[in-house]
Length: 327
Ligand code: XMP
Image (cartoon, rainbow, N blue to C red; front, side, top):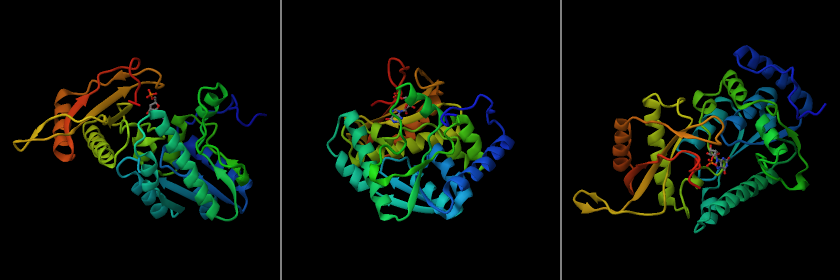
């Protein structure tokens, strides 16, 4: 039987009891596969890699080595949460790599979106590879592959691989405990494993992170504007009952300045664009009807709290014609 095909008899995991049964079964399978060997995992803090980490920690504890690469393009508070949850609460073997300067230096002056994506993906593999080289006795590579990844790469929609191509010299055997699960099932399993709600139910976030929301050539100044304005947007959506209701929401910053006025003086600053959309499959999307008063309040906060920003715009464009991200 092809182990990459979900058996028709497999029940959809919708309850805690079903999740616990899956967890017990996977813990046993992981122990059998891995024995007393070590497993390496790139832990981004996204749902899939976090659930895989939690499953492996339950099964083999410190035989799992998690590597969290901070590429400087994560949302506010994300690297800190990975350290808090996995190192402090779950007592995992976690290597934190501060690669912010490396990524931002390589990205400096690069404005073309696909080139930016390529650099980010490529540099990620380099950093991860360097960490893998420093470790001894690693036999396995764990990945947060999920079932849609398998289906989409079969159909040629995505050349998907969570960690990308590791050089052949490593010769790792893969451990992919959630590869037959759909996203909603991964979330139910994550919840049953005790991961925090804001990790389990988080909205989709692109692999290249804030890199595709800091439009054009990334600068540290505009990157901080994106990160801070995104944090305010998320906080306000959570406070006003929109978290969990709106499928995806974020801010983006174009590489232009406009004239403004602050404290009676000319104040040139960047505009922040708010995007809030609903969709089923990300192929088409409609714009959330965000209450005008809330938009005014968010505008007030962003323009007062985020240094360098003097305007806030709301993107009214559906997909198509606009894509969800701006790059
Ligand atoms: P678009 O912009 O194509 O986005 O309408 C559809 C969904 O995909 C996400 N997205 C990405 N995810 N790597 C990812 O892992 C990427 O390069 C990337 N670009 C877009 C986007 O956030 C949306 O959910």
